[in-house]
Length: 349
Image 1 (cartoon, rainbow, N blue to C red):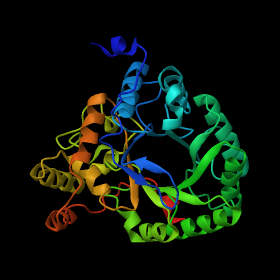
Image 2 (image 1 turned 180 degrees about the vertical axis):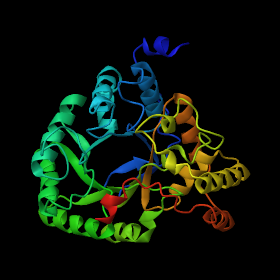
Image 3 (image 1 turned 135 degrees about the horizontal axis):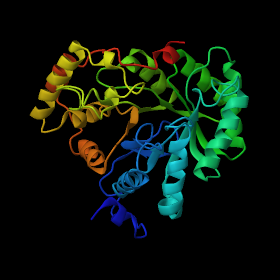
């Protein structure tokens, strides 16, 4: 049966979808997220068939993935991922809305002019209204400040998040790529406003370990959970680039992936990690996801998927999440900083 044929019939979610997915509590909140969530940063713009997108999202929900993570400028073009997700929500998932966690963000450039990026109240709340319109929603479950803005008072940025909740347009609020110090400051402001900060979305992987330098400890003290994005280092921690750069890969497309990340040292370390994964009976991405989830302060890992098969391969990581101390020591020999943190500027501000 082709994808188009499978999409023709009305969608009914698999009854046993919650039986195998582990769910982790998010900080001090009452919310739990699936250990693996689906991110729509790549593969859900207008450059990909909508039928493929629908198949991935249906399969994700059928396997217990209840969290779908978006941002205003995901595409291409900007806004397309939210618009496409809105179409799929309307056609397939509308009756399951109360079983879904849908998140969006604003902070990076979205539209021209001085009000189309960063952390002003003007931008954040206007962007949220636009995101809701594209997705056909009254509210999102989580709304994030997508990056720290050093030129806007943090009180204004956090005040905008508080306003989103008070206006009924978001249930929870979060931040992304903030340093440990800025996270503590943001948490204090939101605590005083009465809208607690409960989630932080940083980049984190075996070759991008910056959050271990103080952020994880700050999150634990503030009772905030992490949800890790780019746990596969944009494909470096897969088999995709270990034997050359495929013509249809992100690394081969202008502006999507820097080939500088595919340095000889990074590739050598990734190949060594692949051998360790094979010894565990896993693929490299499966081990990379399991490693990211080894710390209970990480509530969920965000994965992208260009196909149902890729999604299924990633979800198989959940079958082996345990590591021996010897395995972790061996991994640490090769799980070293690889210069892949493209969001470092926000985390260092």
